[in-house]
Image 1 (spheres, rainbow, N blue to C red):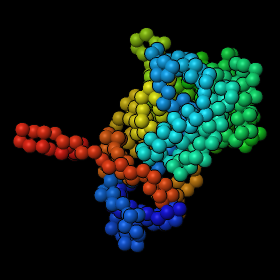
Image 2 (cartoon, protein in one colour; image 1 turned 90 degrees about the vertical axis):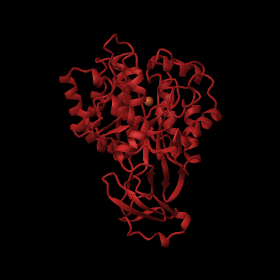
Image 3 (cartoon, protein in one colour; image 1 turned 180 degrees about the horizontal axis):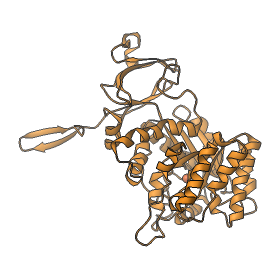
Image 4 (cartoon, rainbow, N blue to C red; image 1 turned 60 degrees about the vertical axis):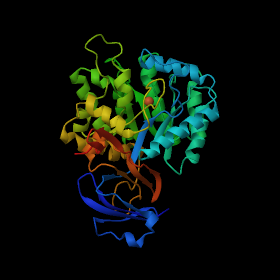
Length: 427
Ligand code: FE2
């Protein structure tokens, strides 16, 4: 646990502050100029120079077993979820422990560079050697200097599509994964999909774990498992540890039914994660024009009081070829295709990136307040709007008082006939 002081930083509400961290904990947050950098070693002082400061970012939905495999063994040229699953099925036939660890470590380092100190990763449990589970559980300890890692037991190919998949899911829980996963829309039948959800709740109760299901990740308005998740969460009083990931079919439900599902989710207390990078390219692939953009109803969910987090889902894998592990990329996609481009949408987007994702993850003592964890991010941008607009470099990422990443903003020079001009992308 370390000491650090950040001076002249600007919070999301525009307040200029000094933030002092002692022994890894926020000791004081005071108006800018009232802090005491002289009480700290000069190496433990960062002058934010009026730059934005936020709590650390959280990546609530990622697949570190598949990360950085894009193009291997082939590119997903149809762009469908189904071809992504087929491509991954080929890759995972020879899944290698060291290969998973090496790729996952690189992506974790990219995430930390962008201000992320917590990652929830899914690990495929339908790969029979459970190599992904083993590698990512070990990685949990190996990268704990950078991030807190949660591993989800994720039955990619379905729990009831083969005899042994349920046993593999249980085995992953016995190995120590943090969260129970599921994928009801990928089961053969409606009945098996319902069983998939109920099994996840049964196992979460038995092993005392959280739940995070890939659910209704399709454009099919007949895919109706989110109602089952919400109902189980209500009946078992488990909403506070339940997450519905994707819920893209909600986009395509008739409004009357969508209203029912949104109400049930709100009543249950379950959280939702939208994954803009993947779902902006995976959904709508079977449409003729007009082509839907499959994303969940973020506005209606939030209006109803449901906590909605933002995940990246994939970084360079068969489902999404792009990405550098930056949550601001996911937010940038969301603000476009969810029509959250108004000035008034800036605050909700940051709330989703920070406190909503913290709720999904189950974080205590989060936020820039005295007594909370001494973790924060300083941006090379004066405010939340400009940080989103420029996807601003993270000048400093502090985890429990220790700098885990720094970025020196690049200098771009435009050569005019009259001479060189250093470009500043801020007005
Ligand atoms: Fe996913």
